[in-house]
Length: 364
Image (cartoon, rainbow, N blue to C red; front, side, top):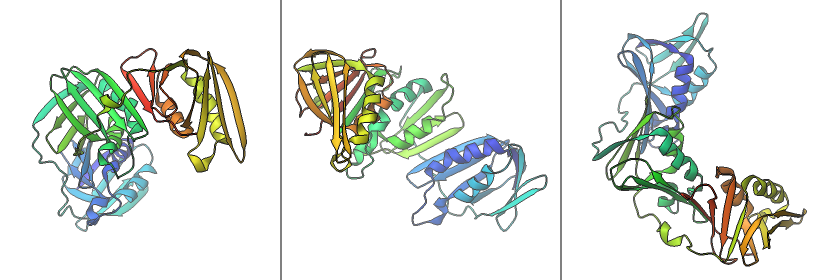
């Protein structure tokens, strides 16, 4: 095979598909990227046998062909090439030469052989959605998906659509994020999609007006964004009953600036106890919030003015978890609702009733 393409297009494509390549497994071929020529483009594919990412870029094709190239080596060499048109040519020994003017590098590839990448799956449901809409819901929720393998359903993001209204939900058992809104889809469904890979692939949707094509069946989902395609297995099982665990009442209500509280917690965490989940104490009084932390290294106290309603309350939280939540909440003014020192705290933006966060307190 022989083709010419832009270095910046090629490295971008490699970086996109490599997210699905495996670094371990029974077959070494899945540590490689599949490269094939099309009419006026090349397609790169990586897979770990449960997830596949494919991407196409423009290219001048002189000799058609296909080859497997080692992911890390391929990426590292192309990333160091200048941003110019580069030529790639393979011989009958699967040696791929990358060249430009007086530069020449050779990568030992492999024949395609038994490499398969989930491209023959039939889907039952298909619809289009605006990239801006789906990205918004995933961006607002993915960070509270669990990374632990003990509860597989919590590694995913629940996408539940009824009458055009979407609920996107994630939880790591300690926190929960719920984004709700209208995506203009007339299909009803309830699926759990691996959160990390969905978030990463949606980062390829740079045009807010771009449409994303979504197809799925009972086991797999395919997402097409421009020249990039993701196929991944859905997560089986029943997601938590998130509606039932969101408190409908409160005894203490506090409104304050997200950025102000975030700054305080980022200081308080420095002196929190790393051995006991980085605890921080909130003491809520009449229009006042005192935030404190302590450890063998020292102690911190900081008081700010807030707006309150209801009872005074003292409650503790894992400051690391709270900081991550505040960093990902987009809105400036937040409402915090509490029932007791042992009950879940509900956090909502003042400006957006369709966004809800939950965080579980720590016992002090």
